[in-house]
Every structure is written in structure tokens, then in C-alpha cells.
Length: 309
Image 1: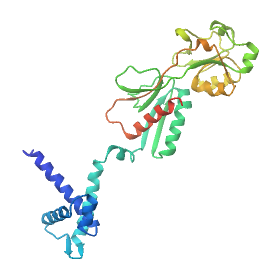
Image 2 (image 1 turned 60 degrees about the horizontal axis):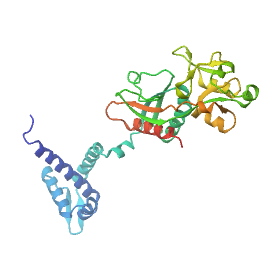
Image 3 (image 1 turned 90 degrees about the horizontal axis):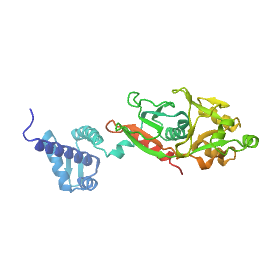
Image 4 (image 1 turned 180 degrees about the horizontal axis):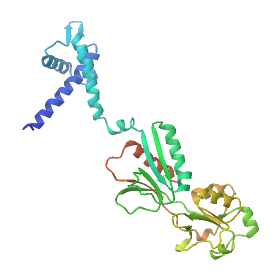
């Protein structure tokens, strides 16, 4: 039966919880005055709480004399039970941050394009694994878009925005795209001076397995080409990058792959005046109610790590 006075009953429950909390403090202190100081209340409030609890149980909980207090045998047994109950209840109402600091554990399922996942995502996961030993990762690398909702993916990474209100998405980076060649290749063939000239030069191709053809190269103003007769073609970005570094052909690489090699002199950018606008990288997750601490940690870590220094 539902009470006609729910707020009165709640008040009674809260008062009894506070009574137990005060009793536990008194049981662990040398005096009611010390217990009161710990709790920030008056010694009289401690005395009243103990007296009320004694009336409820019909048993003395402390022996009192001029030298102080001494808990009774019944009081010791009750204090043990009361402390366990208070701790359990406190656990339910811990501040979110304090609770989450102890809950960063469990599996996080992620998906990302192959090369982006290897180059940008894996270092983040490795750092998190080192600092949070209870975290586990299930990573799906594929250049085909995963069905995040049906596959129960927690976090995805992809190029381009998501126009879908089922997701929470954050833009994390905007890498440029470079057409690059090895110094030896340029010494042999020279630098291309136009997009069309690329068709007459050795090139590489990254194949889109889902579409059954090579990914196009993108340029300023929306121009794009698919090299007519690539000298090297692969569905693996690592393999293509190795071929470009070896001087097999010119290729187009995102900045997160090309920049270290350009800085080291292993690759030379060409057609820089025709570079396309940078592509945005988004980190996203499904909107499915409260976000567990482990998901929020990995999500925020990815967004922070992908941003350029």
C-alpha cells in the first residue's frame, strides 16, 4: 500500500541513516565530543542520536562515566553491522567523479579506418592500457563503414561528419592530404606540374575493397582523379606507403602519414598549390543513455590526442 505521507517516511529513513552514521562515529571515537568534532555537530546531537538508537534496540550501547565512554558488547556487534550498511548506502550516492575513478574497467569496442586506426588510434589505446590495467579493447579496423549500432560499437573514428542524430560526434583533427614522391623517384622523373601529368608518371593506388576500385586522389576546387595505370596497387595503406617510400611511384597520403617522412626528407611534397581542403576526423559514439566511465575516458582521450600539437 502506498503511504499518504511519503515525505514523512523519507524523513524518518534519513533520520535513521544519520542516527547510524553518528553511532558509528561514536563507536570509533574515544568520546562523544571527539565524534562530534569529526562530524561537525554538537556533542549533544551525538548524545541524542545514541539515546534514540538505544531506545529503538532496547539495549545500552555505551557505558558512560566521568572518565568517558565504553562501548558495550551489544554496541560492538551493532556498530559492525551499522558501519557496513552506512558504507553500502554511501556507495550509492558517491559523487560521480569519485565513483567513476574506481569504475574505469571493462571492454570498450571501437572501429576505425585501417591506417587511421594504426597510426592515430593505437597509440592512444596503448597509453590507456598502461595506465588503466582493467580496461580491455576490442578494435575493428576496416575502411568500410561499420554499422555501429547493430555491431554494438562503443566508439568510432572516421573521416567526415555524421549527419545522424543517433550519434554524439566531436571533430578531433583536420589533416591535409599531400601528393608525395621519394627523392630518387623525383630525380628520375622530375616533379609533376599538373594533375593531368600524373597519368604519365609512376603512381600508387589504394584500393577500395568494397567498391572494387581505387580511391580517387583529391585536389583543390573539388578536382579528383584516379590514376590511369598505377604501378603499384594494394588494399593495404601500409603497403602503399612503403611503395611510395621505396620510390615505386607518387602517391597521395594524409598528413598524419606523410608529415614525419616529409620532415625527415624521405618524401617530397609536390603540387602543393593544388592541395585539397583538409578532411575532418570525427570521434563519435552512439547516444544510448548514461555514458559509462570507461567509454567517456577513451572517447575524450581520442579527441584530445588527435588534435595537432
